[in-house]
Length: 229
Ligand SMILES: *[C@@H]1O[C@H](CO)[C@@H](O)[C@H](O)[C@H]1NC(C)=O
Image (cartoon, rainbow, N blue to C red):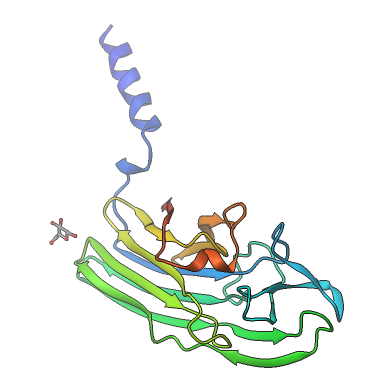
């Protein structure tokens, strides 16, 4: 009787999830989130007249021209073409923590909607893209992201907006991003833990029926994901 009880306890302890494992002394993550315009968005993108395998999308009506898309689907490559890219490196260890960040926009190519002639190329700045520290100690670091950028070729055009909270919890062994994004275009976030391969935090395509005009206003779609280690 006693032996059976002991054995069942033993098997229970082996069946317990990650939480029973000791926290690692040291965790370093690279987290990145991108907004990008997919190759194909129903009702929004059109073939680029010069190369039919590429696509473009008309800007907001009355502003005239078209713009090349990022010509891709979801990708965990850090260098994948994007409209906005925000990245943070966070290091939490038993005696402290550190973090740094980097933000940039992809080049915008404006083309004529009829013949595809390139009218100009410009890259928006990263003035309104930042991580800020909310809290940090040897067990947990919490950063807040606010990122907004518009089309540099169209003065006054609405921003793509991303807001959210990035948490690296060394003791409870997880990385989480909990935020909001616009209805357009597509958004994706990944994390690499201790130099490992990219793991998906979230991937979200454009909301059905949404296009550049849907960018007006702030981020209003939930975008959340967690990766454990
Ligand atoms: C670390 O900060 C969190 C708040 O983010 C707090 O709950 C926790 O007690 C702190 N831990 C230590 C060891 O200071």
